[in-house]
Structure formats: structure tokens, C-alpha cells
Image (cartoon, rainbow, N blue to C red):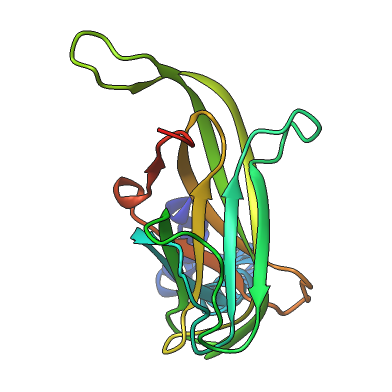
Length: 221
């Protein structure tokens, strides 16, 4: 592509140096103008697009559901589930509010994963970001002589979203994820988007390590 665009430019320069006929120089000059008219705005737009990207980072790690509300006075939990009424949904989210230190009523030792998402650069703060988890549910293969359960065939896929009201590098947005379904559940990807997109709003890129994205055991196992 670049070679195709530059060929007329090189030819035009050669024409001036070789003192070709005026009409040849005119044609070559027109080619130079046409190329500049197309290439320069495209280059400017490309630079602008590269500068209009907000990088986000997601980290998930094994944890327990909090038994008391943290300092911010709220806990957001994504409950993965398979519901016949919503075939494309992978669950729902719930928020508990209250005074810091208030009992959440979750039993101690309730297994979950905690995910944190943060903004890595400019703009320094982002608001009302929809964070979407893509999830695969797989059947539970009953244990053989070894006595171990393992995941089998894919049963269904879905997605569930939460809203991060504010994202900053030094103040990550955290939430917990649990599996209420009778199947193995694997988060296959995490994406983000502006809930109120604007013409000049940044494009969001989520940096994630798929090898670290968790798989949840079926509820009750």
C-alpha cells in the first residue's frame, strides 16, 4: 500500500530533476497533490485515534465474599447462573450498601473471585463504564475411580455486566464473582464500554491475561 502511494511522489520528484516536458511535470504535480490530500488527513486521523484510547487493566484472584462491608460502604457481587428465561445472560449483579463494618450475612469462607479494574493512563478518570464478563458454562462430568469432577461439554454461553461509576489508576473498582449454577463456569473474556458514548469519548482497551481468568466449580461441590 505504502509503495503504491509513494510511487507517484518519487516519479514527480524525478520529473523535476530530469526536466521532463511541462505536461508530464503537471501530471506528476497533480498526483503529488492528490496523494497529499489523501495521505496527510489519514495520517492525522490515525494519530488522533491512537491518542484517543484509554487502557484498562483487569486482575482477578481467589478470595472470599466479605463478611463485613469495607470502608467504602458497599459490596458488588456478580452471581453467575443459568436461567431459562434469559438464555443470553450469564447471571446478575447485586450490591449491598451500609455503614463500613456492617455484617453482610455471607457465611465466612464463602468462596469467590475478586476482580479489580483500573485505568492505566489518560484520561485520569473515567465515569460510568460498563464492564462485561463473557462466560461459558460446561457440564459436570461425574467422578470416575479417581473421585474427581471435571468439566465436560459446553452447555451455553452468556454475558453479564456491571457498571463502574468511576475508574482511576490509584483507586481500582473492585467486585466479587460467585457461581450459583450447577455447572462449571469459566470467564472467557472481559470487555468495557462507555455507557454514555460521546463523539470524542475514548476507545477502551482492556488488558487481561486469559490464563489468569478464573474457572468456578459448580455450586454445591
